[in-house]
Image 1 (cartoon, rainbow, N blue to C red):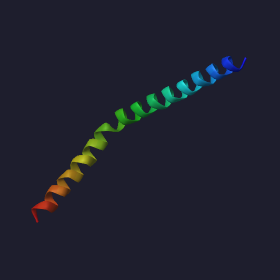
Image 2: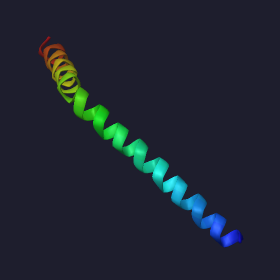
Image 3: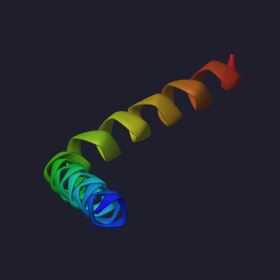
Image 4: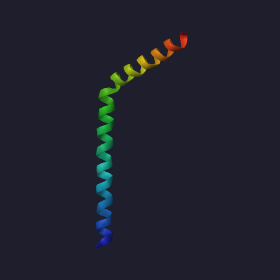
Length: 52
């Protein structure tokens, strides 16, 4: 009985982790343009600061 419950718990953890991973992938996909824009702005500011 304990082995069955332990296996069930592991499956539940795997499902939860999978759902979190899918949510993160979806979020990064939706925000990738904004993230890229912010990264480019930061790189440009660093480059400009180095020119002074």
